[in-house]
Image (cartoon, rainbow, N blue to C red; front, top):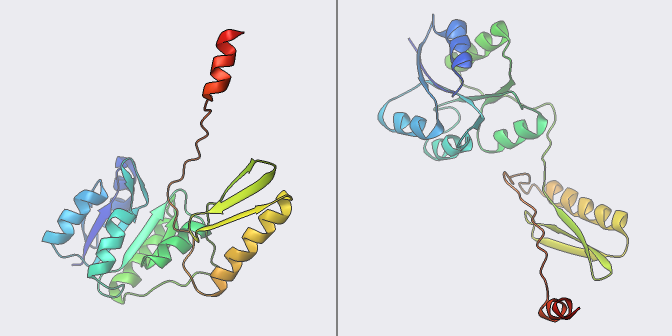
Length: 206
């Protein structure tokens, strides 16, 4: 009997997956990627199935170190998520996930995927590839600015659409060169209003 590690914090999803595949395989369930890493250090498994988003992070916390230790054929990984789209699939493929499926899972389709993966591990090919790259644009001192932290490029110009086009062209060039893009997982844009000393003094006098 094959051993499957399922990483999922939703009790409902745990019950659904048990009904789909636990009659044929031994399943161990853990609610967090951090707990999964401890189990993977101590026990052996034939397949890892993981949700992507968790209250304290995402599945990359377990996928990345696992792929550093075992190849896609040594220990396959199937990722499932209610937010699965081509951008996320492409991102997960880059870090070594064998296959991805959106939630809610279709029982027959998912059972067939699990059985195939356990019999002969393989990497599912994406029909298309997409990445989401975060860039930040602002207007200051009479000109537009756009900065992309992933390629460390800062552009300036007087025409906003032209500036956007220049940044997109640079990103397409990087992608054509085979460089990885789309690894930004968290971004925050903050604007701070600073009161200058001279202005503050003038306001106090008025």
